[in-house]
Length: 226
Image (cartoon, rainbow, N blue to C red; front, top):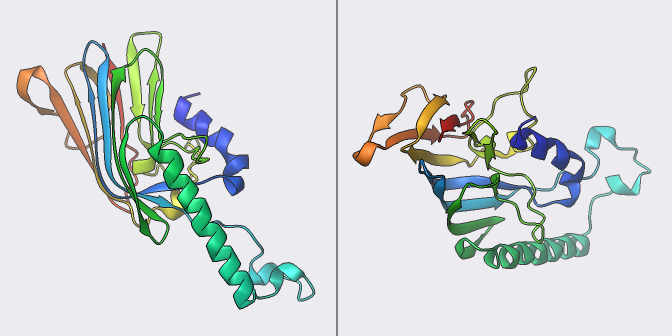
């Protein structure tokens, strides 16, 4: 089982208590060298999805307190609690290595500037922040024993809900997702799923660009061999 699929299955029972971050307008890049050094960037919006708790009107018993419309005071208290939670999310993200800036834009939306470099001697996922309760990754890099690495970006696409598709909690919250995800590498590209394929760059590098929209069905995926 791949790391991205495992993360989604692990996350499922925790979603009601977690902060489900989804991409908004963004530009993201991933550069991986043959020596396993890498740099990943994400510049753009991160949106905190609306909480989906509570009963829907069709499920309501008129006698049930959960069905009663909130009073103005209760609505104000809930709004204040949400703002406090969003402030905590921003503070938690800003403390994490890689975040060059985190700015709250209002309406549950942040603008983030993230960049991190390192060596792929272990799996890598983004985002994952226990303090912010951000537990559902948009990008996962899974290292394998045969000298390959599988890159998958479930936050930037949707494989659908058919047999064998990974559960995707972000499926209903992708209406503002728009941008591009670019993979560049001088390693061997064993497989990839962008229909235009890889374009040759300088110094023996190859570049694959996935265009991401709210209706993107293809989850950016590639396999590299070092």
